[in-house]
Length: 111
Image (cartoon, rainbow, N blue to C red; front, side):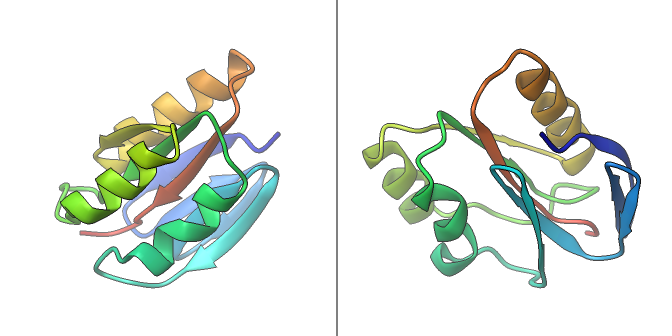
């Protein structure tokens, strides 16, 4: 199970590997994701595997907005959604994974 070792503006360290971009964590896979907005196409891959929880990190300052449409589509799937600034989103993700929850994440690295 991936563990976010560190997050700082512009990059993440996950399981000892550095990523200098936005990332998605889908089950045990880390994908690079590049966008300054958040569309359904960005979120859909983390929804498809039907996790119990999705954590969205909205950037260092929380600039990325999650549309009502995205929130509604996730809710319709019966998936709990947690939205937080990326630092807090990483902490929450790690905590949930440690508890054994099936959780995926979409994490913005800047803004």
